[in-house]
Image (tube, rainbow, N blue to C red; front, side, top):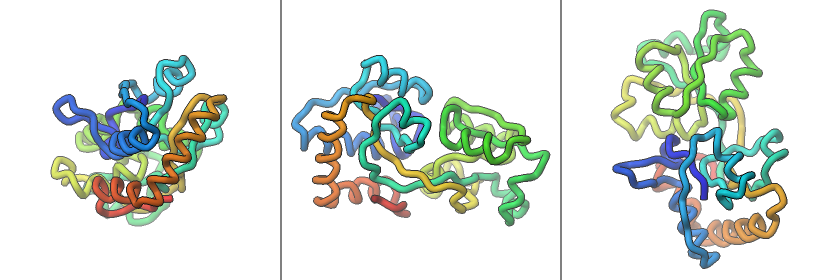
Length: 225
């Protein structure tokens, strides 16, 4: 299992322990399939190359399904519905009351490098000044420090804000800018593993375990599929 650990609550580290939604689901999947689990960590942009190189069997790291990624990997059935959301400083929230505020010419937008948020911003706001960050926490820090005006990222980051006192000076605009599905990725031709993962996912959904895990980490529940 390959993961990027800078994406709370999907996958993150606390005192060197890797935890989160994907880790809990991976353990449940391995119980169903009766297979051992080994977790390897990468930078987000290194995950698909690691899969293609055979270093890992599956990416379970909050990966959105996109047509571009489908050219390189094979996705399982999705299990979570998310979308991009904008996060701003609480003191600036009144300036972003209308969706058109994000089209301001002088706006500086922070994105997570390699994410669907980055792709969305590049396509939707081609004239915007964009700052790329290697992780979510560094992007939120840049927002707090005034280096960017807004950070656009997966809605799981916005939902997590309400659980973290560290980000109490930040506010999600709580509007979905896109609609995306989260799934696991295996090698392009690894249909056997993909089918095994889909079968395990089906069992876990029927048992209510997927909802249970997502509810645990995100009480303000997003849409599970």
